[in-house]
Image (tube, rainbow, N blue to C red; front, side):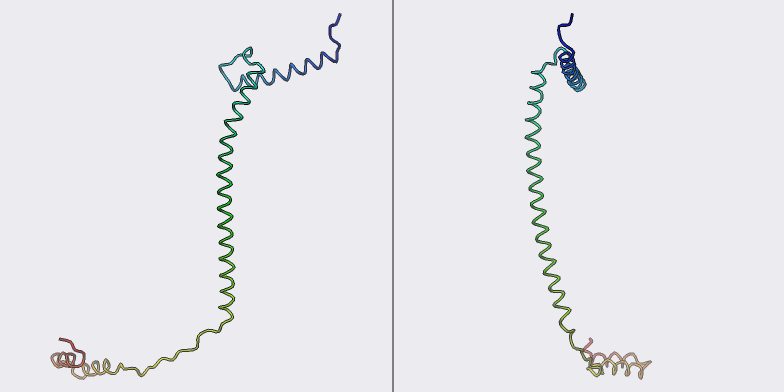
Length: 141
């Protein structure tokens, strides 16, 4: 004689198997527990306790990540603005003509140096005369 029909038996068996799976997982993570100590209230307390602790830490990590993201967005905005400014300045520089050509005066006042060299070449053995000339023209002492 059967106390339960097959349908109810299968439903109860499925629930028992699911509970055994949960108990096995809890026992695998908690070495000191036995199967008899794992009750639905223990599982519920463990889930609620771990959920709150992890949630607060995750919230602080999320807030820090959001702050870093805002800072990065501000930097990107600032750098984009600088790039636009530099691009505009570059375009303006390309439109302006280059500076005019400059002229160099070759006949500048360098004759005194050449005169000293010429004097030294003309008086090659006379060091005293060359030194006197340098004192007079260049102000050497």
